[in-house]
Length: 114
Image (cartoon, rainbow, N blue to C red; front, side, top):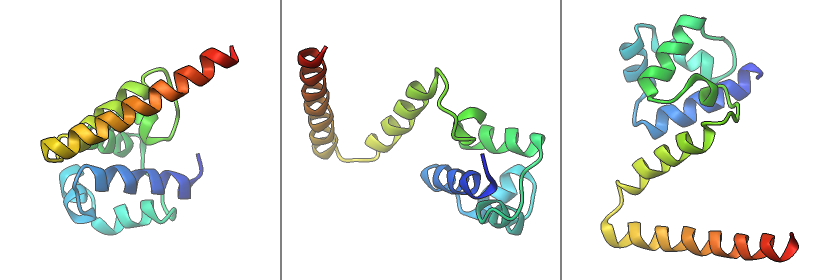
């Protein structure tokens, strides 16, 4: 993965976790300028820093690197569940109903196709 793409992944997961650059930097023991440089694609983290970032953001390194490995779906669902839990119950149910409808449509399409 190139630096810019990694930086965008880091920014996305940092924001989803609710961290500012400053807070994330403090949590992993580096400067906010370093986090900014990573997110802008100017710097790359060391292996130790990469692991610290993933642990702090509560995601696996492969997800942070943008790799779709076997556990990608469960990691993504975990993130979505966290986002859903931030919604009021009525809105949460609406989103779940929409997701359910999309799955039904996709299954019907693939069953007819296959």
